[in-house]
Image (tube, rainbow, N blue to C red; front, side, top):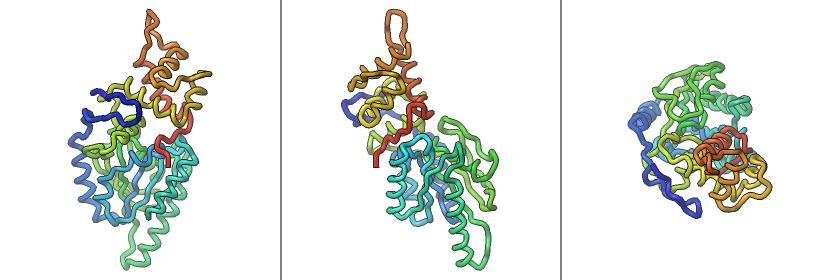
Length: 289
């Protein structure tokens, strides 16, 4: 697959084929089980709060109580995370930021779930623990959150999309029941920037993309909002505003050079994207509120 280049962030991803059959099955599974749950926990990536929200989820969940978790706050811009959480609350949903690596924010979520439980107990004669469903696109950290909520490694985790395959009911530390679901994407990106942002953060497998071009697009974005972080990370005192030249400066600084002074673009791309995804470049939110 080729990601075509553009001077801004509007390069198309028309050739990207990323909607495998298991995602269609996941949608059907969510629809089938929605009637037996009391609330839905939607996990999104705090670095891309728009791109990581599947529009299909809105159609499926409708009026069901929704809790939006901005995960990976340790990788995102703190001020931007606060602004996005406030916006989501204005839209009528509970929202909180969580860092699954440290557990920061998990207690806030548990307290809110207790409030939903208390309200249900008041309204229903038959008392039972809440039944919850967790949804989200691939690689937003659903499994890491589940492990925090259950107090054990109930779900497989990984830094690559597509780890969770089938549905499974799990018991939380407070006795509530949680239905885990595989990550689900949607059939067409109306906005090409959505596809790019998902790819930057690893929600689309690198194997189906031209990683050098993907990195070049990422650097272009960074030059607009986080140029200083690139300069600091790669120890470049003067970084070009041209994406390709900036990528070559980074390669030269890191010594990613073939014999004959040719740039190793692939190694540069893998390094820059891996370091972004691992938070080594800094706290970055690609979608500004």
